[in-house]
Length: 131
Image (tube, rainbow, N blue to C red; front, side):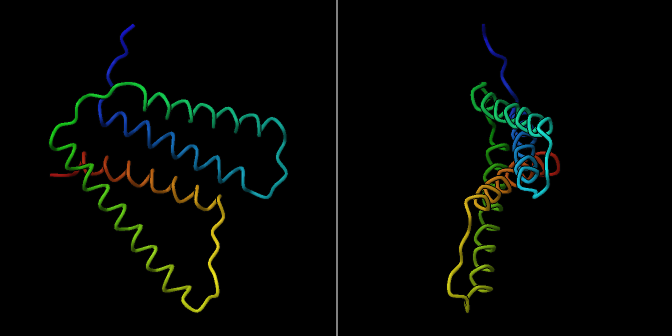
């Protein structure tokens, strides 16, 4: 059976939706409230579906990107990583007098989810409204 090819835009949309879903579920799982068992089962089911969506998005072949798509992806990557460097500089300046700065693994996961959402979102913005 031959799998259909995903368009680049559709691939980024799937990635954005699944990454956003995982981020929302991580935020929900971290809320300090009493949760019934059925809601936790619901959250686990959505997390598995979002993870499956990301795996399928990686495994299903995509159409070859043209020069415009490569340029838009490079611009999106540049913008996201410039924002990461600016955020690191701001955090460094704000914590200059502090003894140490500790970041938990949950916060690192949130940062990666935010970077994935921002990267896909900026790419889709450039595809829609770019030159």
